[in-house]
Length: 105
Image 1 (cartoon, rainbow, N blue to C red):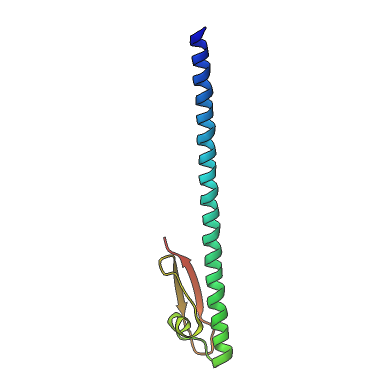
Image 2 (cartoon, rainbow, N blue to C red):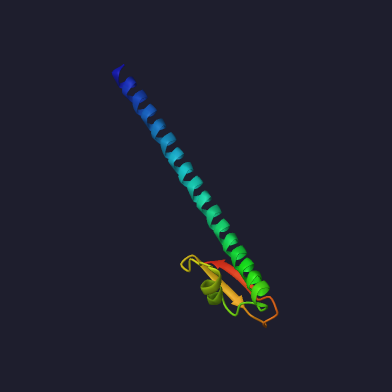
């Protein structure tokens, strides 16, 4: 009879460990999904900030900014270059530049 109690106790412990491991796994997946959402939002905000600064420059100075560096120096744009890459292609002083913001891999 004593062996049966030990097996039952071991089985309960195993079930508890499995449930605990599953809970930790689901928690980690939730945190990972939240971080992915935050990165996507950061990318979207950076793109929007660059576009707004570009339009502000055009409205203020009458020409589009010549580079992203110009936006950084004169319009307060901050780019985490470890996380994002910005492609900024100018076609002329009076044509909206092509702006692409991408997450670094």
